[in-house]
Length: 92
Figure 1 (tube, rainbow, N blue to C red):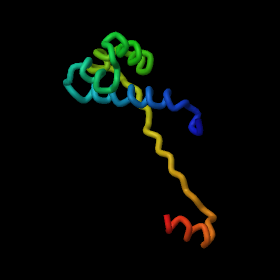
Figure 2 (spheres, helix red, strand yellow; figure 1 turned 45 degrees about the vertical axis):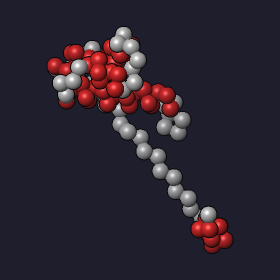
Figure 3 (cartoon, one colour; figure 1 turned 90 degrees about the vertical axis):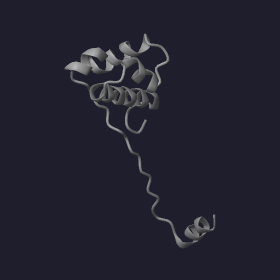
Figure 4 (cartoon, one colour; figure 1 turned 60 degrees about the vertical axis):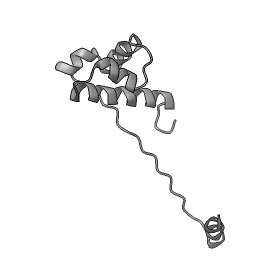
């Protein structure tokens, strides 16, 4: 939510980005790549892939442009602790 996209959407887009990169860089069967990235049926993968990349998986392998969806890293920094709080955390 902080990044403006629901968690499920982030996971789906990130997965489609990774499988697109693997299709471009390897000679593995496209169906095996689809299973690797969590698609349970062969029919569901081409539709999801083409909606995200605007190209079919086989076309992407040969000469198509694929989209990338960057990895999001979230860091949390805790500031403003006084000595009493610090000692509490050190004892845990």
